[in-house]
Image (cartoon, rainbow, N blue to C red; front, side, top):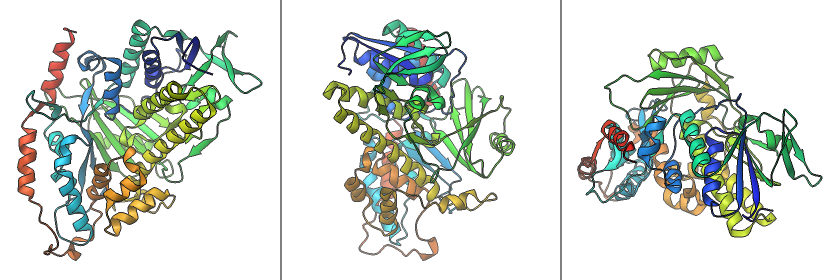
Length: 510
């Protein structure tokens, strides 16, 4: 049992997930007699499928007390206000939309957005595209950074784009030099267990034992520790059938604006991401191997990026999660715990949420069966909540340019959770989405703004020919007034490139 005193925690696997876990544990328990050792093989690299994050990553660095001016220039990082979706719908006026990280300022215009979407769902001809109502969409469209002028009284939520290899290396240095984490480079051959099922040690290829009291599996898709524990895997493949990715970098053209958004473009059998870093661009194509071969996917991605690209890497993905993220005296994080395709950049968000929930559980009640059960229920629900939001992107798609049949098959997926079925019914019957999200507690994973952006962004409304003018029962929304409000707010934000230069210049002063 871990009580925070005189215990040795062994983490298997480096990369962003492993070193992030090491930093969070060593930082939280820095005043206790807890030793943290991270073991990784020098022969195994980082998968690095995604190079984007949610605002949870800012929370992570703030928790560790690491300034943006210190880590961002070292990791080629840029700011991210959200995700621009292109080509997921071919409905007129809804060919693209922006999914923002909801922020306090959006509270001033979101009610009007919700009102108009409900009016349009019930057959009224009113404007309901999300980009007209939310500030981050306006900022991203003009390549603004998320930091306002000093006299602007509101903060804006944001995430980052970054080089995953460099973030892992940065956190390794911080963990070992600032937090006392021991780093061992060993190749693990087996996992030693006691008769009770508890793990007692990792055995390396030279036969040396690395003993510990608690073990964390950050070994990636190999899932070395949790495979030894025989923890069942819960597949999401019945609803999410993308199982491959091809990735390749491209150079960034000097002097061109740096976007403050990830771009997610629908292709013939999946979608392609474009992620801007300070030194290069990250590109990838997540697709279904039942609809495309590796060669076809690589060729389509090349065509999509229309630029000279680096060497392509092909990746296989197992989409789902382990049934229990905490089993016996072991915790799974990162790809060992589960994988949801990088559509909403939730990988590191889930690592942080898992480790912090684990630490909170130990600090609040110790390593009891009740704490472990509550933790596993909470983390499973979070994974399932993120899954539902990602599944909805495919189930609700309005793309009909479909040479492979992929998008029609995605619209026909019927392996939907009860929560997602309920939300779809609420939307299409014209009922109150905000109330439904609140009743089901779904705002813990994605806010009402996010759900409305997804449904409305695709144009999932009655056909335009069937819409009628709003009558006396519909309160008119003053769109020019909202536009003026957003324009005035946006004037307080500078360019993305200038903010990054300022951060890089400030680095030397830290």
